Image (cartoon, rainbow over all chains, first blue to last red):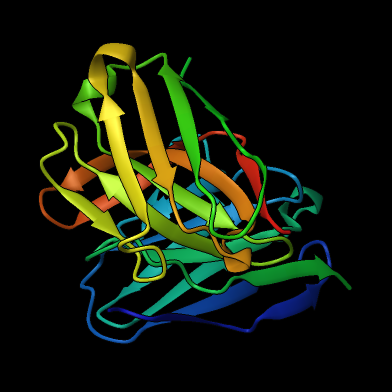
Length: 106
Length: 123
């Protein structure tokens, strides 16, 4: 089975900061990597699919990159509504999620 | 508007069974694969099971294999999860999610999610 890891597990940032979250797969998954945002008490929301494709309606400050085993999610200028937990998910095989990265206010 | 509404959760004793349902609307249900994803209190997301549009392909997480059974009824636009031999570690909010495929064989994502139904396994 493919295992997913994320780093950091949490981070504190300020509005306007550039934030980068890393996701790593235990084996190559090509570009079959998705990113989701989850706010407390809410269902996850798709942000990025196929490693770098922005889901319709998602602000352009969100971007994704990577292929193979190493991927990043970048928020170019953190906004108040971006404080949430972010999960990566591989779709190369069964849809394993990473453990999540919580972004909170510094 | 796509809607996914889960039901069937509740408090159940260890070793007992429960059946979850997900009612889908706003899209052509039998065109899409569907999944169950769970989230234990205060924890991350865990993919549980998925089923193709025609039930021809089914998968399970190792943690539930042999105990849970996913199924669907396309005539009723409904997804199900039969959960047997429940354990305390199955306590979680269970979401159903719609899959959209962008690359045959591997590339897919979950573009719509329900609000979840809570399953609590405790004596």
